[in-house]
Structures are given as structure tokens and as C-alpha cells.
Image 1 (tube, helix red, strand yellow):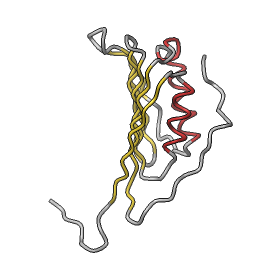
Image 2 (cartoon, rainbow, N blue to C red; image 1 turned 135 degrees about the vertical axis):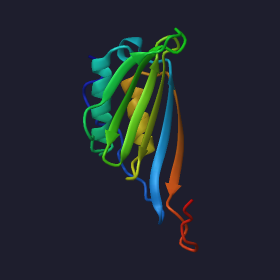
Image 3 (cartoon, rainbow, N blue to C red; image 1 turned 180 degrees about the vertical axis):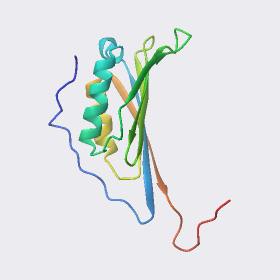
Amino acid sequence: MAGTALYPRIQTRVPEVEPLFWGRWCGIDLQGCDLSIITDPESIAAYIEQLCGLLNLQRFGPSTIVRFGNRPDIAGFSFTQLIETSLVSGHLVDSTQCVFIDIFSCAPYSTDTAETFTRQYFRATESMRHVVDRYGGRPDRPAVHS
């Protein structure tokens, strides 16, 4: 099984957050991943466990890892892992050797750490990270409910 040891050289500093921070979403897109890792459910399970440990995300219940896709161009494993502060999910595509990871947590975490670890774990040749911080309102006006 690939990638079973944590990567000690990864920086795990959590950046500061602004007032009213509600959560952070990070989408990580990888290309050129190792096919033997992305097609192995045990390696995927180990990735989830190690990522959550590295980012201090407390897993809530077991992860769900399923293989599906009725078209060869999208077939692969997908996973979800509930965490106490939200969700980690992903889809790993066999035909293109691409991996798409989504992490949303109401607790701050390092997106740099998440991307670096994920790129190394799946032995990707390229990676891209998208980050959105969400906020629970503005101090100068009350929240609007619909």
C-alpha cells in the first residue's frame, strides 16, 4: 500500500482567520497521479486517515469509499468522510489519472499543507488549489434569514 507514512517535512501552520469566519473550503485538483494508488481502496482509506490527522480534522464515523461511473471516462473511486466540523470528499478518475478533493471545515486549517500532502500522497505531477473562506455575517448588519 502506497503512502502509508506521514510526511514529516510538510509545514502544518494554520493561518489566522478574520472575525466572523465560518469555514474554509479547499478544492484540490491533481493530474498525473499514480494509478496503483488511486485504484486501491486501502490506499484511499489510508489517505483519508492521514489527511485528517495532519489537518487535525476529527473524523466522525467511518469513511465511505465506492467505485462507480458507468462511462470509462469518469469511472473511479469516490469517497466521503464526515468530520466533526463538516466533510472531506473526493473522486479519483482512472482514465485520466486525475484526483479531485474537496475539504470543508468550520475550523481553520492549512490549505498549503492539504495540497502538499495530497500531491505527494498520490504522486501527482501537477496540482492546483482553489480556496474559499466563508463568513457568518457582517458585524454592521444582522443576519438575514429567508
